[in-house]
Structures are given as structure tokens and as C-alpha cells.
Image (cartoon, rainbow, N blue to C red; front, top):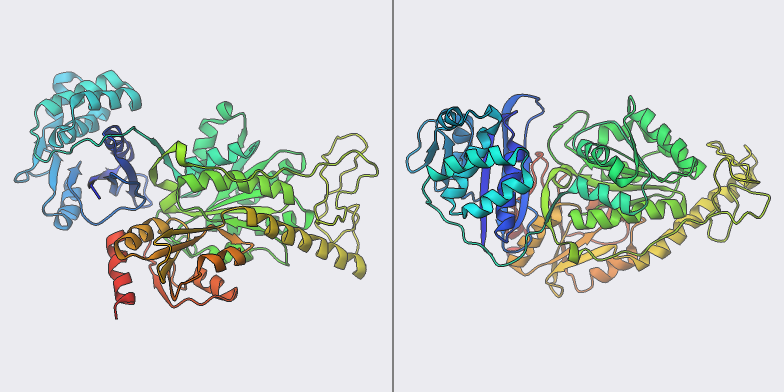
Length: 551
């Protein structure tokens, strides 16, 4: 693999994310696949922030330990990261960083003063210096600035000044190939929801789901949707249920702490058979935990949240392509089966940025809702062979639509009669059985790596990207369940054929996927767990896998 990695670091408010995004676009226009990981504390200003950009000649979705370039916007960046990469090339702001031997030191203030430029353009100078150090042709730098920067002319001018003052010390060669779309996981979720027919998105901001709210709100007119930010998470789910009852395909989003407040509304949706899509982006918990770091400890919570027994759909994508496809599928399946549907992801995927080849996305089956045919009388909870009751909406002709969270009969009338309670419970269970049957048409389990290998890494969510690289180096199989409820037992059994040792790799302390797999009758030989809020790197995981598989 041909690859290069860059860290750009500074303090909150220095525009680290924007600088990282522009550097990523430089690699993108050189023909590389790109992945961006952002690391930041829960502070509005101050604290150390950095973006790590990894570019390679094959798709990547995890950052690695080796760093080639360190772009230091302050001294703290140099102090923290240079010991980790003593052989890297440093590009530093000479006004804020002590001179580094063999480094590229740029006097940003002098450039801004001579150009009468605003302080906000300082990062453009640093990017220009980095580009020259890496031997990136100016034509590509200028093109990227004009395509992706506001006030492109001024920023390009500042970048050129620093570019001309810098020497090429560690050149990067271009790779034949087109530039790809760069998408974050949350952006892919939003686009998938819209593709699935989204009408309304309702959310209260909570990291790392917040950027999904911002993305959809910023594009609401373009997408033809309504976006609402209520006063809290309880209001979010109750407003969303009302929206869905009125006929609008509705999704909501939060992290674990926010979803915790929604569980009573989730049970309401289950009993009243209201379709709702819930995006849960995990961070490190419990409670406030590490608000800006990643984790995979909410799987059990999402699988079992709410009181009583009811069907739910849970999908956990690993990359933006899967996030797009399964978000569209989630909203369609939710409306067909009138159940809660979850898209379960983590901070790494939500806020990470990835190259996406639009031609490789593929398609999933399209599920359509069952609508009332107008044959009166209308029974909102009609018991059908599939358990799916035809939908009508308030205001429709000849349809009295009752929505009831209490035990009820087919017409929606409250009842405590044992026979009817049993009938309606079995009706909801029939929907789950029908959903499980339909999911046999979907690729619910991904098998990657060496298909015939007898040792396999079991993983879910964004961890799969590190597993892919380790499996390629060691000749292992990777088994990734995308659908976690209802669990695709048949597809999982096929995926495990010939596997003699299954090693679960998860970012939680208890091996929640491993426990789910065991619950469905499958053995897991070992677990490799990480729970410090940081994602697995392929290098780190490689060592841990060797410890398990070595004789």
C-alpha cells in the first residue's frame, strides 16, 4: 500500500477541521483515497485539537500510527506529537512555534501584514507551505482553494506567498485516478434518509450526532424537508411521533444520553405501531462520559430499550456507503412494518470523513408501506396474515384513525380483555417474523478478507475498517453483521462456514456483539476489546490479533 499521513494541530478556534479538510482535498485531487479523523476535547475554546489525514492508493477508513507530516499551528502541537513521529517533516507557524531543525518555519504574521489580510487566512499560509513541502503542484493547490474555500482569491493569494517561501523536502507523487466525493458518516446518514423518503428530521444537538442536524438543517430547502430543533429530547421523540402519525416520514437523532430520555416515547411508538427512525451515535459513557470520543457500548441499550416486548430494526453501518444504503432501508422498512428502526453508529464514523466512490454504492431492495385501500370500516390495527395493518392518516375520507399506547383492539379501542391482548401481541410478533423473512433478501452480513480462512475477526460498525487491514496482512476472514436486530441467524451461519476460531473485536469493555452472537448459538473464541474512547488503529490491532492467534 502506498500511503501518507498528516497531522494538523492547534487549539479550539484555530480552524483545525477546515484546515484538515483542505489538506484532504489536496490528496483527493492527487488521486488518493482519504480518511480524516478529528480529535478534540469538550471545550469551545482552548485545549488541543488535531485532524489526522491519511491518504492511500486503496480505500482506508482508519488512521495509523505512522505520521509523515506534522503541521503545527502552535507549540503544544509540536510538544505532543513530535515525540510520536521524530522522523516526520514539520511545517510550523514560526510566530507561535520554536524553530525546528530541518523543519519548514513560516512567518505567517509577516505575510498577513504585507498582504493586509485578515487573521482568519493564517491557515491558508500553513496549507500553502505544507503543499510546497510535499511537492504538490501549485495548479492543484489553487484549484482546491477555488473549489472548497470561501473568499478563494484572497486565501489562494496568501497560500501562494507561503508556497513560494518554502522548499520541497518530502515530495508526494500523484496517483492516476479521479477525485472522489468526501463524506462524513453523518452526511451519508442524512443523504440516505432523504433517499428513503424523509420528510421531517427532529433533533436536539448532542455530540456526535449534532452534525447530522446541522447538515440537514443547512440543506432543508434543497432536500425539501422540514428540520426542527425542539427544547429537549423528550420533546423530540413526541413531536416526531405526531409527525409520523400525520403521514410524514420522520427521523430523529441523538447520542446515548439523549436517547435515554426517549425510551418512554420509544415504547409508545411500539405499542401504537408508529414508524420512526432513530439515529444513535455512540460516544464513551456512561453518563456524560467522554463527550467527544468514541465507543461501542450502547448496543445492548439499543437492542433492549423500552418496556415490554416489541419488534425493532437495528442496522450498524461501517462506512459512509453502508450508512447511506442502510439509512434509506431503515426508513422504508420502518414504514412498511410500522416499527421503530435504529441506525447505530459511533463518533468515529459520524464525524470521520471518507472517500466515497459513488459508482460502488450498489443498491438495497425497496420496501413500500401498505396503505389502506379505502374499504370501510377502517381499522387502524387490523390483524392481517403478515401482522401489517394498512395505513391511513388523519383527515382522510372515511377513515377514523385512532392512535393508542394502551392495550387496544383492532379499531384502536382500549381493552384489557385477555383474548384481545394476546391477539394483538401475536399480531406484532407476526410483523417481526415477516421482517426477518424479508431481510433474507438483504446483505445483512458482510464477509470480507480471505473468504476461506479458518480464523475470522468478528466486528461491527467502524471497527471493521481496522479489521479489514489486519485481515489483509494476516490472511484472515472478516465477518461483520450490519443488521443486529432481528439477528440474521441464517446469513451468519453461512458466513461462519469453515471458521474454526472467531475473534470478536469491539470498542467496549464487555464484548456486547460477542454476547449477542453467543445468544444465538454461535461460539466466540476470544475477544479483543478497547474502551479508552479512541478507535483501534490497524497497527495496534495487528499486534493484539497476533497475541491471540500466535501459537
